[in-house]
Length: 489
Ligand code: G3H
Image 1 (tube, rainbow, N blue to C red):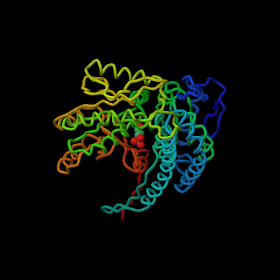
Image 2: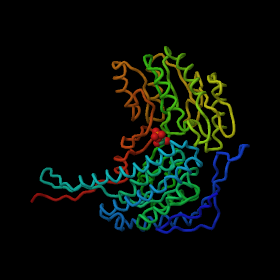
Image 3: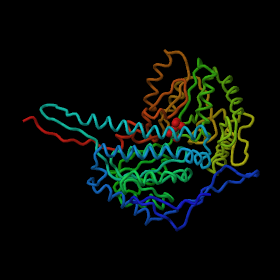
């Protein structure tokens, strides 16, 4: 086990000798199932949280600090050095992604490589942004030199399902735009940040990046209560986001950059290509065991093709391979959250009590800390699995006869991130797409929902998001337009 004692404040890697939090893997290293102790991280308290905040405030120095006033060229050099050092940590970070959150080897490698690409694309986009800002505009005799400036201190919290990629999608654009930051990793996927502490420490001026460990209510809440945070950047659940937002005494001054829950539906029309639809629905519902905000979380299938879809889809779900993340061809892996199987079981029990059935033979079977994906049909609005974001291996299916039925459900939903639409007839699809883009932010035609490529806008309507996160948009989310104007006189 790795007993990690360091945390980063004000450019110093401090050593913690107080209480620590054990980090467990849900992967068993013994024959008989038993979670594995991976190590521990500091359980920091309020004084350390305040130290991190003060370091970030001092480094920002009301916009006059070294970092917010630094020339773009020099900020780029810092970020280029960082990504260079980051690349050397691939093997260890990938190993921790597998052990800490149970992500398969190919997906863990993809998460690392995608994050490196995200940082490199951010650097390139930042260069373009600066190039464009160098041009003067002239309207009605007024010249303007318009730039993008930082916002201040950013508190950044990431989720367990993409502990590297999603947190860096917040942190990296926040840093490069000249803000100063405090970053608290998620509960699962926390040890994997430790190999990167030194790179953060050596590549950026002191106080620009502060990395703390601990519970949200012990370290993040007191930081918010000071009212000195300018941006709350969080990918995770709205309960945590709201709780933190409420701590801020002047929350109307707080900018929110949030990626939250979603209940993305698939809509299967009668002329859909069935093999393609089944493959995409399998990936969409069960990649990383359904623990993705972009996962398909409800499937609407037209009654004309329902029986065919239900039969084939259920058979395919039972053919998926369960195993450890490094096993060949593995699709389903141990769940990092020990309470998840019980939660999934509650959703199944509720649906069964209200008239649904499990269609696949293995559906709902428990072993170790896992529960086999359950294909549930018919699912109705009264069921919890219809209402809640399951974020795990359970697939609710609804049958429809009129397209207005799924459209009305989507319009009434509290969420509005993406939809997958399966069908062929362009005269049916075209007007439907026009409607769907007003209900969600991304329509995936004959393909499952996903965030990437990361240059595309990633956002949502209603409770699903605030601000937009793509390489391009995130630079804007973490900055404000400022300009110098002068008259032609
Ligand atoms: O949890 C939400 C993630 O951003 C999903 O990303 O669609 O690439 O798996 P992904």
